[in-house]
View 1 (cartoon, rainbow, N blue to C red):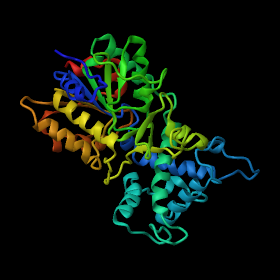
View 2 (cartoon, one colour):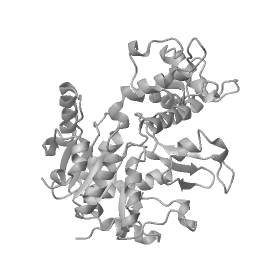
View 3 (tube, rainbow, N blue to C red):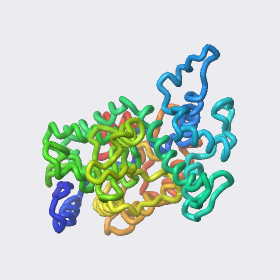
View 4 (cartoon, rainbow, N blue to C red):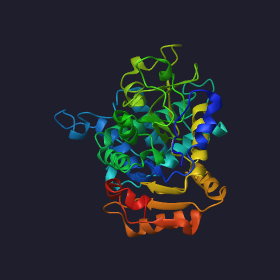
Length: 394
């Protein structure tokens, strides 16, 4: 059995390497803990809470506890624009509203408004598309601001939460299964990235499935070695990827959320050192209108497609199978139908306080689309990380 999933440097060899993943014992699909779409409403509540924290002060002029190190700086033009957007579009007053009493729209709906308006070249009152008006192109800025805001919320909420990811990776390595697993993450955080990157101490490289400009620099992120790498494919992008639209190059910021540290908090380092253009985040927002046309995302899509069709067992971790993720469902259905033998599915997405109704609906979504091959468990990610073989080898 061949186990290599490394990315070879010469272009003609790439597809030969992809063929080597035949017979993999498992694939983990999902965000491995705090899922973007799993938290859904909770994440949107946090966005508004942070906006409110940054715009409110005590009667003595001091900042409330939540705002002592605010994610949102109300004096920043981006944050002022976001506050105006929530007020105009959803009547959410971050200055005066009791957040706990608000019925929030889904985050997919919020982002979907901007995406669909841009696609249709239409505007809303006070939010024009490109023309000669003073507020021209406002929706395009808002779309990017919302991505930045999500990045800031995730950065704050996930700091120091990689314990279980490291346990999972360590358990797989000790069992001799790490190279037999392909990780596919729909999340932007870098918790699983950092856990896998630490495996360089055991002569294991991390393969994202794309080429980074870092490969050409000495003493930087090295090109994954064939036969000594583990694959992590992120078809929705990552917080540690910076895209230069002029050079058409991708920069990796290892163990650093470059989207947050460079594009938001330290804008002085947001420019490409080669051409001077401002980097862009390579992140696909969680909307129904996902744009996967970027050349790097297309490459990852292809690698993910091939990997899914080669594995014999898919394990979903922390993934609720949302309706908005039709692209992932498309890949899964291709993997399920374009093969001779059966493909097994196991769902690991239980957590403390999960309501029975939510469990039932989630199980229904999985089985409605993937059929009876789905094993829906009551296992949590923490339990899976402690003993992954209990799921991978039932």
